Image (cartoon, rainbow, N blue to C red):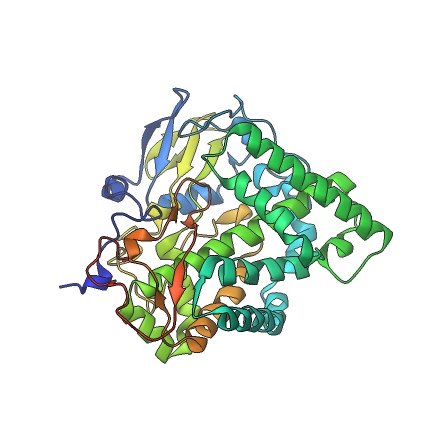
Length: 408
């Protein structure tokens, strides 16, 4: 029998709905899209890997059909702008990827660990001095990756408020199309200005390095915008939502606090269990057979990484959060040619940040009942809007063992 803190989180936005995980017996099935297009839904781990790795299946935006309505979205979607790797196929994608891959190697990212440790300590110092309560999102989950991505790209940290608001609006599905468009233009203008500054006076950072390539200013700004948005938002939401998951699972929290060496495994399991970026969409360029089903040319395929990461054939007892699980092979960073470039940086940030947070605040706990934590559940990247925490004297802390919300 499972303990309460291992119960399946039916309420959590980034936990797949029961209707979705129930489809695991048929990992690839037909689905009708918002515009009437009949494409495919992938929920199985093996089928998802096959789709994401197949070069005959395109990532180009203009070929996609949206699985759910999106206010103001043009039909068809426009092609990816210059520098946006996520919406391109080879050879354009290959050209960009080749220029960037060497700058995101495991070795190079691990060399940044001292910088991550310093930024993490600075954020924890400020949080402790302002305590004994805080919004962990504002005090810790956002600043740590923001400091790192600014250092990596050569973005002045004092400018972070300007682009953080733009990134949040771009990913907010409740924002109207005009607001999202203006946020995208604002971020693009900022990166264009930054690229010109780097060309005029290069510094020791990734954008300055790229000014020595054949990339145009527009391409450099596009790459910078993509890396800035992705490097900030995904890791920030993993830190916020991951802390919520640990605080709501006392057994897992105690295990990680007792053995910080588990941090690497814990990060992989949190990535698998939470899967904050979902879904992934592709379109077949020719007829392809996967799992005994034929995907016809022109049909869009929606891959639910959430469901694939809960596939019991790949991860036994998948709804249980277990930081000792061997969770490698999850699809939270995608798979194939478009697998996330910054995944190693994200891993380093989380492997440093979670243990440091728990070590600094042994009494860390939620300052409100779990069901009062506001979820960011209407965005491309899931998370928590805020996470009120405290570490002062325990005068009757919120009960995480029997409340409406308990993250599995």
